Amino acid sequence: VVARVQILAHLANFAYNVQNHSALLVLHVHELFLDCLEDKCPQVVRFAAGGLANLSVNGAATVAVLQADGLRLIHSLLACPDTATVSYALTTLIYSVRCPLLQATDAASVFPQRVAACVRQLAEGAASGTIRNLARILLQEVSAVGGGSATAL
Image 1 (cartoon, helix red, strand yellow):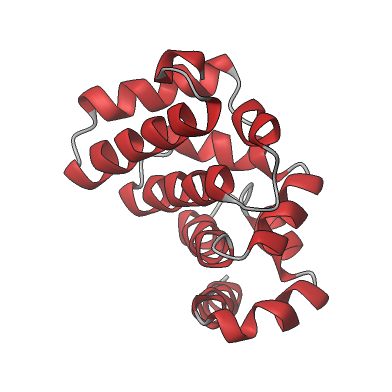
Image 2 (tube, rainbow, N blue to C red):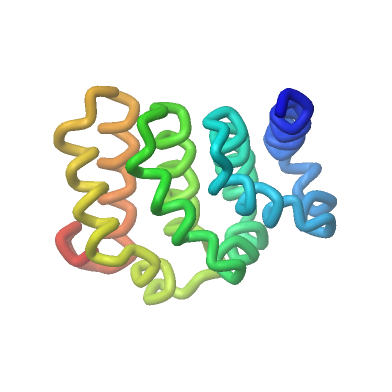
C-alpha cells in the first residue's frame, strides 16, 4: 500500500505541471486515477482525486474523464469525510463546467439533481470554509453556464 500511495502522490504532483498533461493523457493516467477513486485506502483516494483535479485544468483531460464515466466516481467523493478529497472533487467539477471543449448543455448536464442537492448542502453547511467556498463557486459556475439560477442544477 505504501508504494501505491507514493506512486499516486508522484503522479498527482506530475499532473500539477500542465506541460506534463499530454504525456499523462497518452499514458491514460486519468484512468488510473479514476480506478483508484474506489480504493479502500483513504490516502490512495485522496491522491487520485488530487491528480484528477490537477489534470482537470486541461480540457482534453476533462473530456477524457467524462468519456470514461468519471463523473459518477467524482460525484461520490462529495460525501467523503476527508476535506482534501472533497476539495479535489469540487475543483475537478468546477473545471469540468468551465471546460471550453464542452457545449453549455453538456457542462450543465453533468450535474444530476442529487449532486446539486449535495453541493448546495456543502455550500450552506460544510464545516470547512474551503469546502463551502468551492461549493459556492461550483454553483455559480453551473448557473453561469446554464444561463439560469443555481437551482437549475
